[in-house]
Length: 286
Image (cartoon, rainbow, N blue to C red):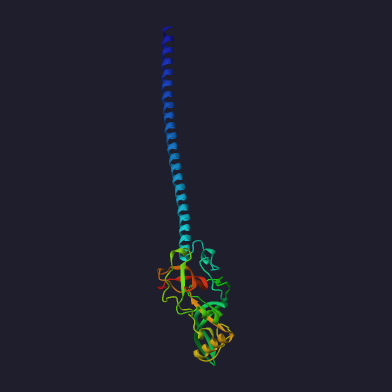
């Protein structure tokens, strides 16, 4: 009996020892699992933070890009001088033309082009002259051109001579120009002119030498004076007066900048204009 009791105590001791070992083993495993779970949670949190940062950077880049596009559009609008306007110049808006009262003198033979060089053959020799080139026809609604002038372009047109001369009294006519985007902001000073001239082109510029590189058949041979006489004689025969205006530079634009201007050749005696048009005006330093 005593021997059996001793065996029982030994077995119990072994059992309790095994349980303690198991508890220690599973306690360690639990701790490891907790540590691993903590690591995974921290890893997930770091990944979420990185993802949030990437998304924030993407939104910032998109916002910056959109802002840049708006700024670019605003700069383009500022250069054109007419907010929201771009591309070819057509008929000016009513916000501009409402300032103009037409003199009622019909405009004919309206032509837009440039003063530049052309060539023609004279025997074996190729000669070069200066004249009104790159011509294209234009129209007017009353006295308001339905097409505008790009930088350095010139418009030429004809009016009834006797009717025009009755209104032309000294320097009562002046070419007035305003910023198309701010017509109430006052006149913009043009470079190199007081605005009183209506004849930028000379008669010889209008009548090119025959066989010219522009392909114009309305031409004349001879010296500049001969061609000038040919043009003025044609005007006299038709009882017309030829007027021309250049898209001049302005004194407010900085180098590399341009302004979109609305201009009218205004008679201060009666408050009416011979012609009105929009034009792109560059800096005098370009």
